[in-house]
Amino acid sequence: MRLVITLALLVPLAALAQPGLPQPPVPPDSLGPPTFMSGAGLAIRLTNDGFGVGGVLRAEVGETTSLFIEASINPGKDEREQQFFIGFFGETVVPLKRNYFAMMPVHAGVEQRLFRDSIEDNFRPFFQIAAGPTFGYQWPYFEDTNRNGVRNEGESLEGAFGGFGDGSFRMGLGGTISVGAYFGRSRRTTQGLRIGYHGTYFFDQVDLLELNPDVQDPSKHYFGTPLVSVHLLRLW
Image (cartoon, rainbow, N blue to C red; front, side, top):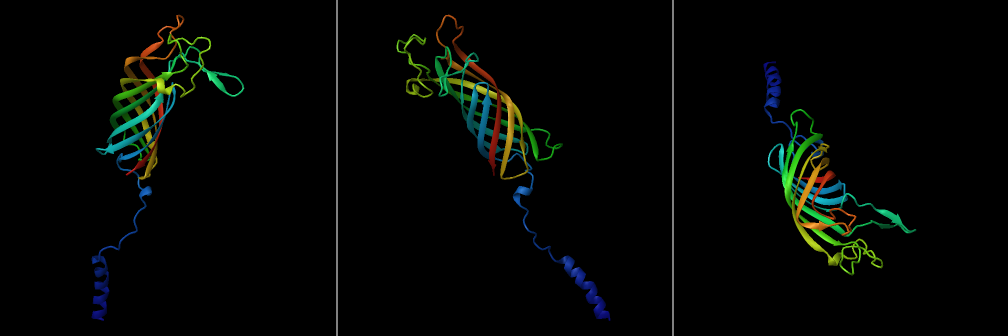
């Protein structure tokens, strides 16, 4: 009887002394990201001048802070440009337009997460500021045979890329200030929405409108626009 009682006491103690059995791993996607994490992905941008697309590379440097580089390509326009449809096949014309213009900002910045201690990880608001060089390229909207900056009779439209080889580069500096948020708990992918303002100053003027006496300030140095962008990122 004493042996039975002794064994009955020792067995539970032995079980408690044994290390716990390994537990099955928790799927990574079931854990909310404790920090901003690093990642890379696609940015789809919308400004007053139209749609743009770019790439983003982010590097985590703290629990609530990341550094990032964003490069994109966006159209640049004068706010007075108006596009009209003509003909039966969807042709368009922009009166008084002289040149197409594309902007390619390559900006670096800081992204700071907001309210981390009071908001769940499936909604991660942030503040963002970035700056850097902006490369521009200007090319003809119409075939300006007499080089007077005005579309005369008989000078045809070049098409979106018809006169691309006759263009010239511009160099500028720009920056973006914005707020936004990332959504979801996945450690593998995330998506976010950003709203802000983007501005760029080009050192050489950009000639957007015809040199027509009726057009004031046909060229400009500064481009500023509200910005809305959607980010699709792969995390690691």
